[in-house]
Image 1 (cartoon, rainbow, N blue to C red):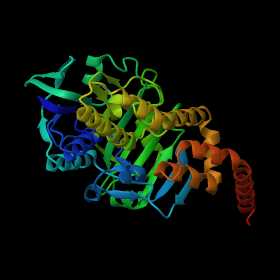
Image 2 (cartoon, rainbow, N blue to C red):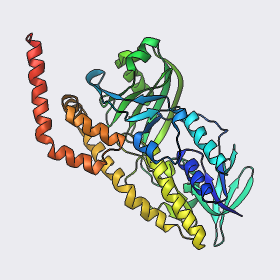
Image 3 (cartoon, one colour):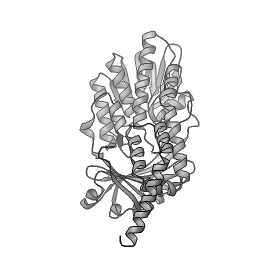
Length: 392
């Protein structure tokens, strides 16, 4: 009988395993793929995510995102240098494997190539059924993504809300790498109720499109083709990897535990409905889950309800605010893009929120009270454009 089994070797599962092992908990980490494995993801690790990791992961960071480019249907509206990095880009195969290695060093037993078929629990513990046998533990954490087998077995999040993404790693000429530099590109005109993006990597670019509803998404392959054709930096791009995936949209209040089991990260639908960011919330939920499981082990209490309460206190409000802001942007994408492109102060507010200097509540408050400043900057931008069109 193990102390804990963690299913899924993504950021949530690996960080949770590491934190438990560091406190003397006997942990088995199960992963259905062979490690290291490719993970469909833009690969942006925000500053706030980095600050919440329990160790330094800088050896696998590719590029700092120090600037932002905003386009609308390919027309550039903004190119701003921030002076500080919002995020670092990573290849998820390298990043995730790095986290697994830190877990192993902490004493976690890792088994890859082991797919979970079913989970059962009773008053004494949890049984995890796999193609390679059955494993028992006192507690279980499901960090196995948006299609979580653990969640399905427990009957949790059966009607989860998800978006849809299509992501490509692309090769471009050296001039394209230089042109993109350390800028992250966003285009909210790439498709209705979504956006397109470009992230710089060390020797290539990561490109993708996102739609806010997986069930209503258009043909994302066609959308991605149009988006790439609209971006000059991608005109000579060659796709080397192409993968689609569902993205969990957080912000709802759901049960995230059942008895001796709980869900973390994407399995718990903890991702941002505006940008689709999930790594920060995966790490934060891993920290909460580690404390909940450790305390339950210490008290010999078969109840993880505190975890759901903590998530709804610490994380759910942030995701609900992100969902509301996303609804506004997706309802008025052109207006929001033009306003953002015209207001340096609004740019600073939004990018500092992505970085983690503000939360969404603070961002919304600052935008409301800063409306006069935003309007003044828009008027100044219009006057400047008119002046330039008449030769000064």
